[in-house]
Image (cartoon, rainbow over all chains, first blue to last red; front, side, top):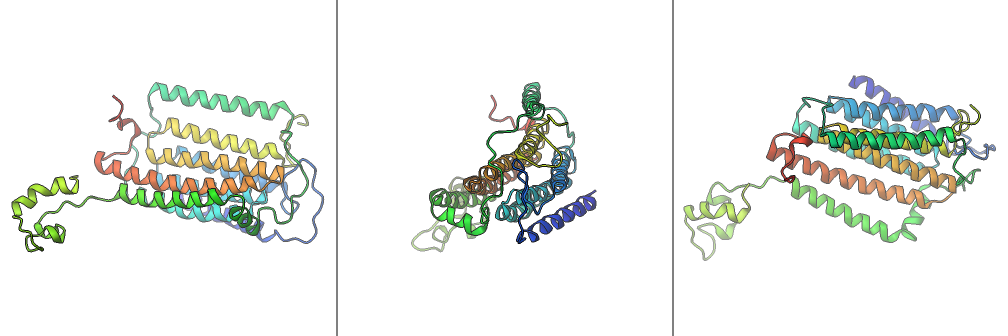
Length: 244
Length: 109
């Protein structure tokens, strides 16, 4: 199962790299006015990539084995990266692979390996309220989806045609982030620092001192200008260090 | 087939939006029906990706780079969310010895 998923992931990677490699074609043909896929990307690529994406998502939420679920999630992210490349977001396609299929996947796998637990009863059931809420949300989404598919009028927002040549390039993204989006960019950097510190604080084991030698140096009996007996240290340590 | 907004040979905005809705629906089902908190976190990632896909589709349709910038920020926030969420999972598992969402009802009453 995992081998199969891995092979599908590598196939997706191959297709994504193929798409990325084909970007700088000289001749640009005319595409239909309401189609968004670029001329270098055939329409069937969308169906393959979206099929990979949806299949990966379905496998993710139905799998009992958590590692299998994460591998399916990686396949989903590769398919999405290909679709981002279809949408002329080359930089974000690369970032998608680096961040999601790299960093977040490693984080998930690491936590799963640390916890090392199988789920006993995969589908069962949260409270009836949660079931009703989930079913209601799903029905609402499906109804709106049916409206979009059967309604027959495409969204009127599409401008059509080819975007500017630097659309989605690294240079254009950097231009945005250092001019118009400078404040969100800096705010996100602060958010990431807070997240890193918060993750360390949350996941750290608090070490309970078992002898006076584990105390800070100033609190040790032979420390500077202070004498403390071992029993005092024992009595004091849980309060001082936030007992577990 | 012609009055369908979703045609097979010409990939328009609707295709990407429908794919986003499907992914969002799968994420919602995963959050509401699975008990394992790790699967729930993965479903949240799926939903964030569905939102990203919608942002990029509209950015491409409008020839506007701001959607891509917003999607980049969403990716950064999703990474922070995954780090914090998994740290909380590890902390909860250390105290409670399981990761079933139904058993984590300490703050409920």
